[in-house]
Image (cartoon, rainbow, N blue to C red; front, side, top):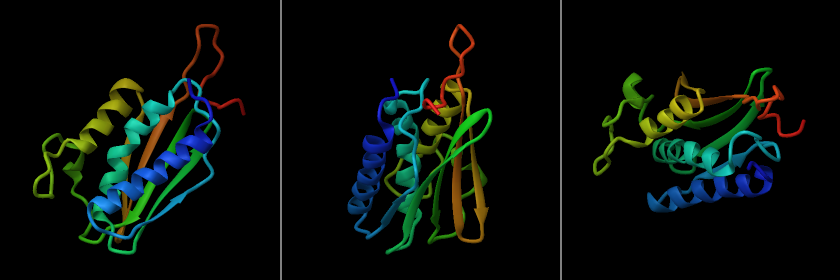
Length: 158
């Protein structure tokens, strides 16, 4: 669980951004920051599943030639991913996380609510949206998990 996320995970995130950009016919740059080797307590599959809808949303909202950035922060009690992009059509609505809410024709409005369910429901984490002008950032915080003997998980061995 949680092996070698830095290489494989960063590559998967870049590939996802490229895939979504090709699907909507845009040229989007992917900028993946320094990501740790692992997130002990969270499988790579979980991290990718939680982030994919956020990446798709960021690509869809970005202007042609824009950039989607993924950065990582370690806090004393949690690990955080920040997915940011410029928003071509204005900031998302406060109800963006509600199941069924969408601004895109042909979409069902489940992506952001799925991410929210995984992050908050399964991991007891937090997801927030920060809007600054036309820049939008989704901040995903996953609390460190503890093993039965009290050792903190989620530190990636650091």
